[in-house]
Image (cartoon, rainbow, N blue to C red; front, side, top):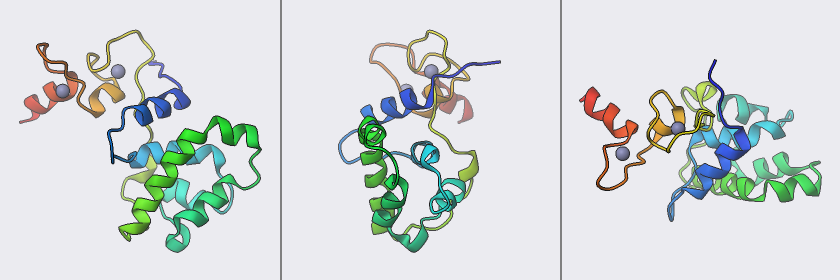
Length: 147
Ligand SMILES: [Zn+2]
Ligand SMILES: [Zn+2]
């Protein structure tokens, strides 16, 4: 049975790796919102549907009743979630998302390895980790094989 890094670490890593203007993916957004699940946010957590198509309403629902210590601890993750939701609202893309229930933040297998070097590691395979002058990363190698 493979062990994976924990959700918080994976979320922090994804956020740190975003480039300018890039937002988190659906799976990461779901992983951030899930621990805050209550009856008003469960639609979003289970289907990706944004009630009322309103990012601020959903953020308010997520954060209400949560104590300040937890909000401070998750400040960066919640900030990234707000940007993600606002972008979906602006794009009018607030409905259910196909495949949503299988989505989650991509996590590295909890076994020491260089990012991008371990086959069957979801986080390694989720994006390019190529370093110049070295062999292609597993993400890119898989694409060559599929081509
Ligand atoms: Zn990995
Ligand atoms: Zn690559």
